[in-house]
Image 1 (tube, rainbow, N blue to C red):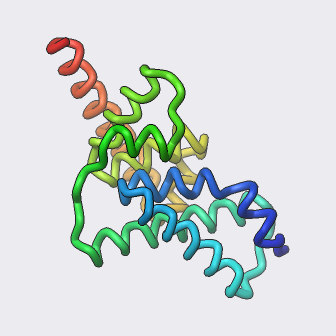
Image 2: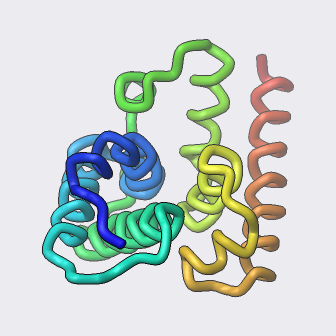
Image 3: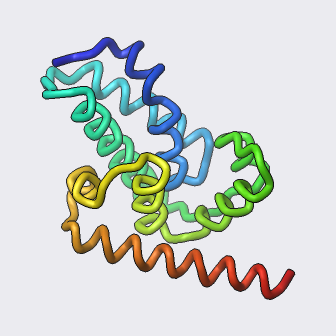
Length: 159
């Protein structure tokens, strides 16, 4: 099964951008990753079994491309809150505050939290997408939640 690239762009562009942005923390890099992901789909001759398979493949490609970009450029710089707000269109202050805290987490926790909570993938689906064990996904989810909890509690204490 193959779907037209134009349809996939309409359906998945925002999800792929959010996943890439959570790793790159840079709007232009995330845009490049999304564009490269759709280009790879267009060029590939791969057949898919279902729309869910296509979405999982696109996410896996975008995540891998974002990781490769970060490794290649040796960049681990942070992003401004304004860039976060523009890029991900957070509408409420609480959402922006929480998103800002999530973006401070290390990439391996950030991406697992994103896939689990925002993309609503199961632990086993995340394991397949990231090509890690289910146990690793559970560990990263737990550690990411704990880091986020500690960060949020710290902010509340100092406010």
